[in-house]
Image (cartoon, rainbow, N blue to C red; front, side):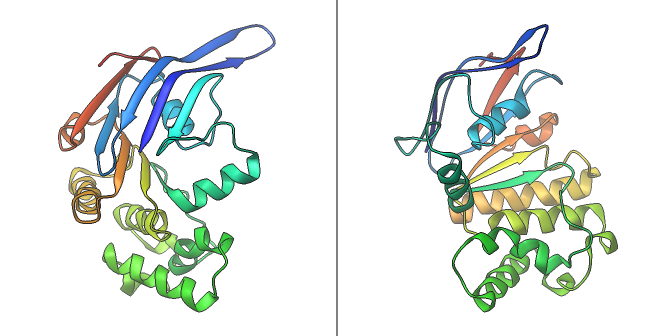
Amino acid sequence: MVELKEVVKKYQTADIETTALHNINLSVQNGEFVSIMGPSGCGKSTLLNVIGLLDKPSEGKILFNGQLANQLSAKELAKFRNQNIGFIFQSFHLINDLKVIDNVELPLIYRKMSSKDRRQLAEASLEKVGLRNRMNHHPSQLSGGQRQRVAIARAIVGQPKLILADEPTGNLDSKNGQDVMQLLIDMNQKNSTTIIMVTHDESMAKQTERLIRLYDGAQVY
């Protein structure tokens, strides 16, 4: 599904150039669940942003199902992300002024569909994470584990082919963290959703099919 070829990412300031990623070569197959580990500052989140087409590589190629993606226009990239990729973040990134159902609907607003269809998909997505009964609550009324499940519902509402999860259990206690991890495992196994997850937690990484380690922006193994 995803292939990175000789990907380099550099950041330039007035005084210094920093290389965040060094010659990354990576292939992720359809239906795979892959975790990425490494010390803080090693480039894990940068790699996830590059894979998610939120950040362009300085060098190299990114292919999705054989299609060269990193040369698409900004408009084409936005459409591609919306239709193919779901994002889950450590800090949830929910809008507190919106109800849970409205947060989950957000990715669908950019698609050509009726409000009724959006609502049905959002309700079905919340059902999958066990929170349909909380759809009219606001995020501030939910626990951390529940908010992360809402974030997962938002990520999967558009039925993406790829889920990118950046420390999805990082702000949760061990029980809620494992509950969220089980949701991701179920999505992967039951729906064949491809998942790439950044984590600091070795116990979570061991539950995935493959572990990739980064060190100082380089792929160790």
